[in-house]
Length: 483
Image (cartoon, rainbow, N blue to C red; front, side, top):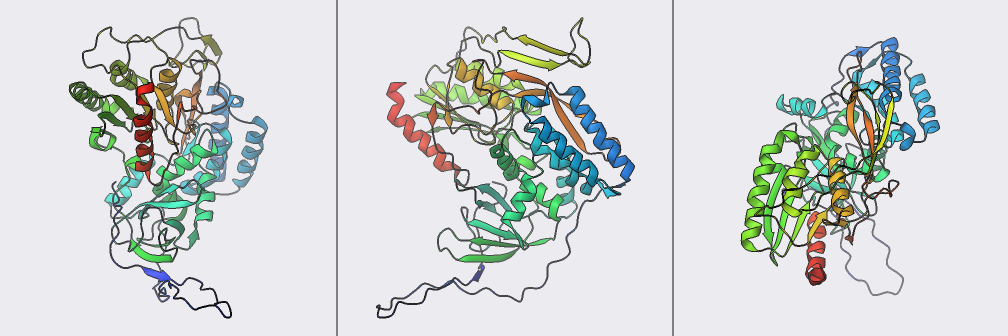
């Protein structure tokens, strides 16, 4: 992790309520939570990246351009969304554009449509937010010094903290940041997050938390964090200097070491982690995969886990060339049907730009007949709530053609994905608006209204991800002979 999970120094502690002893009962010592100091100086005023101020007329023009672009390019908003609900929310947002706004303020309004589109490929964002956040910390700015994950009960938990966070530990329940309750934080972020489902929106909030906090609440340099300790149940509060290192999911250019890893686990089970199908990392993934599978062959592994829990997608050719080639010799595809909006970029001879084209997909990708380091044993693809886009395409191809078993819980992303994402120009605000132009049906031809249903149900623990991996290892150990 880029923000360390180890905490040091002493935290300031809140008192816990102590129940009065029952009359006549034998008095027993009661553990008390240390008191919290209340005289901390006020935090500096939050600093924001506001961007330029846009006139009311230009705000409306960009919003209308976004709505027009969605209808012109999307293969069918109603495939995913309730059109009436989309139109109602769009009308409310348009009416809210009553005067000049900064770009950040415009995003706060425009982005309230994102959840209604019910598609992680469709939405509006602050422009180049990874690069902007990187520039912010490079110039001496800070980001919120905690990474978060949702627990099974939907409470927001500490996943990692920057050094100096006292007794805070992974798993502690986050109560507030700078006086903003987690209920407020989560509501504000989810209300502006894209995603196929509410579960995917939460996964998006987890991985984009630092950026969303910066745009919504600004940078105060130092941050007051309050948590409930998972061990003592005491309330802890500490003022922590903001972090200056971005989490992996927010880095503009993560390294191959960040994205890919392999090893051989106890029981001679191969493990390959692939956190992105990023075309910029194609050579790196190819090298890692070749090395890993050569070692898997040499060691004679009995089973293989491909971990894509942190993989938000990318380019299909990467999983086709660097994963499928090493785990199957069967022909396969990731779709059975499609509906596509014709654009200049995807038009075939005779197509009319703007028309919809529907069709069955009967082509097959055919791995090489012989691959010396191909693994022929059982393969398990371990997915999580953030697995998305090309990762879902990889999973349904593997599942529907009997190439690998999917492990985990039902995916937060829908099993029938959209793709070929196009940008919709926002000439005045400079915001980033996007929409897919193609919708796919998975190879099996059914199940589009659900996520990918796992073959091997394993509870996903986002807060303690190693527990999920250990659960899968236990399952494989108990069921390996069956495979």
